[in-house]
Image 1 (cartoon, helix red, strand yellow):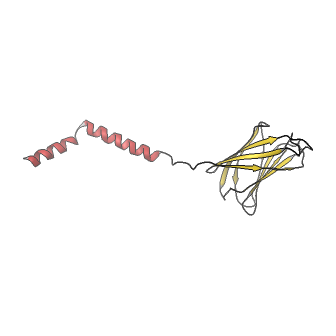
Image 2 (cartoon, rainbow, N blue to C red; image 1 turned 120 degrees about the horizontal axis):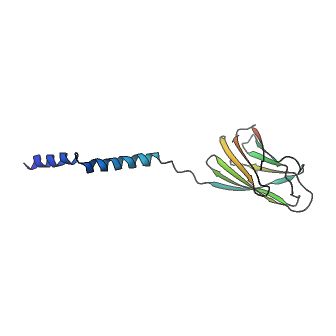
Image 3 (cartoon, rainbow, N blue to C red; image 1 turned 90 degrees about the vertical axis):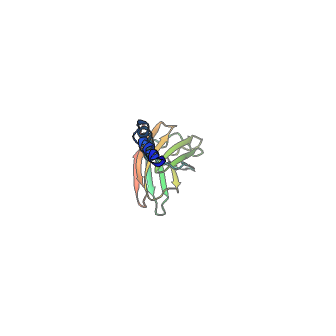
Length: 160
């Protein structure tokens, strides 16, 4: 009689409201855990000093990304007003997956005005990157997609 009673008690548990509530809560937790996004990689940070070049500071500010044969990316910034040849133009780059944020930092300096700055970045792989460029000093920005494959050139005006 002990085995039959135990079977009845065990089978009656599966017919209670509490059992189905607990089952639904566990199922919802499993679905929620599987739907959570994977953790993103930590952002990598870089800083590059630019080479100041002669050019027309009054020209429309423009970004020119050129992917070189060895995979490095040259970034040329034209229309650089208010920076002398004793000044500096640096970029601080944050890379999170395929999202790249570039913040331009300008130091006016003295001397002859320059019109362009050039940076060479060496962290790109042959992928598509979503790039956001900000220049706090000028209040200009640009957003673009760069397919980092040798021979690709992308031009984008900086807007306010």
